[in-house]
Length: 194
Image 1 (tube, helix red, strand yellow):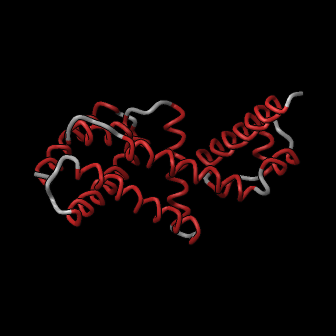
Image 2 (tube, one colour):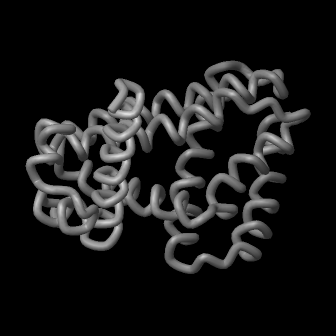
């Protein structure tokens, strides 16, 4: 087997492990994750899991890091034509989700819940929250003449609103209601950002 094939096979195995762990988190919460459950779900031996990840904790850490990057990077790189397009994009990131993205949000909410009791996850989540607030504020500076301080406060309001929409979407999954509500919310943000 060539080196490239081995690397590809190793990456595929890691991905299967991460996906299995995410499905377990989505269904049972973080506390439900174990090496045995990951092995059963992924069809990979426990020893192979520990070969690729030193521990179940490392699997959780990688999932958490991937989720946080998954949230922040699209906001940082968004190139919409105007304020309204950017704000609509933020809302769409909550209610126009495919099955894999819904799984990711469900897992993120489980991490969010765990972070209320786990200082390590709490520190990661707060760091990412601040990174996301800064990313939104940086985008808003392209469209608004408000002070950086005000844009940071509005960005935090947007994050809180997105969190609520995300939770409700996972509960109800009614895209039309979410879209209509978010469109109304966008008018409020536009007013604040004049």
